[in-house]
Length: 225
Ligand SMILES: *[C@@H]1O[C@H](CO)[C@@H](O)[C@H](O)[C@H]1NC(C)=O
Ligand SMILES: *[C@@H]1O[C@H](CO)[C@@H](O)[C@H](O)[C@H]1NC(C)=O
Ligand SMILES: *[C@@H]1O[C@H](CO)[C@@H](O)[C@H](O)[C@H]1NC(C)=O
Ligand SMILES: *[C@@H]1O[C@H](CO)[C@@H](O)[C@H](O)[C@H]1NC(C)=O
Ligand SMILES: *[C@@H]1O[C@H](CO)[C@@H](O)[C@H](O)[C@H]1NC(C)=O
Image (tube, rainbow, N blue to C red; front, top):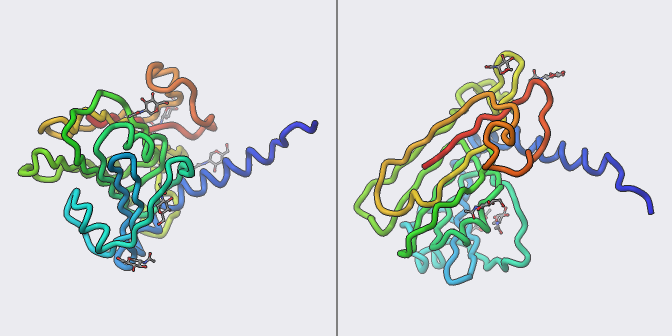
């Protein structure tokens, strides 16, 4: 038996980081032409749609009609990153977790289409730049949003979609409290910058750091609640 060569892991890591750093910015140039990705979960069915138009929240039949949708089998689902806007309509925390936990998404819109209150659990999202939330049960309330960072420092086409200050790079990780969809409350976020180790500073959040950082990298940890 040969040991797994180190380069297999390194290759994966480089790929991951390249995606991590590069993809948020490309989105800015192609948004006007590109279809939106809309994923909805309903009664253990997952539909992954590509839509040209904005579809009214939780209108499943309209989405099936207007978008190009495919059914996704949970067993074949892989964790992916989303380099353009992603909208998710969900009815329970487990469906949302399956689609989103530990996924990389820059621009995310979440619409809660269920009626059963959600438990307090934390979803981990990489690289989140902007989040919009909508709660159908209280449909009369306006959409709310938080912006965690802006990409305005990337005017020159700098592929780093993470902030890069004083030779230091920041990797964004967000923890979203799923109970925020219960009833109406103001969407809030709180960020802690320059966290060298999540396990050390927030021991109850993650049981191991997902990847180890070099000296000039650290996390920006954001709580959304
Ligand atoms: C949904 O489709 C997009 C491509 O349109 C793909 O990148 C993504 O991985 C799919 N997501 C799931 C959960 O199948
Ligand atoms: C964009 O969405 C339309 C339907 O809304 C579909 O016909 C078309 O194939 C989609 N294009 C891409 C590139 O997915
Ligand atoms: C996301 O994954 C973490 C770690 O496995 C878990 O503790 C957490 O409950 C998950 N989040 C949700 C909303 O299920
Ligand atoms: C981080 O440090 C390494 C050397 O330690 C250097 O090559 C790299 O350019 C630095 N990154 C940034 C963003 O300054
Ligand atoms: C981040 O923390 C390190 C170590 O505490 C410190 O040297 C560095 O100046 C900090 N960087 C910023 C941008 O606050």
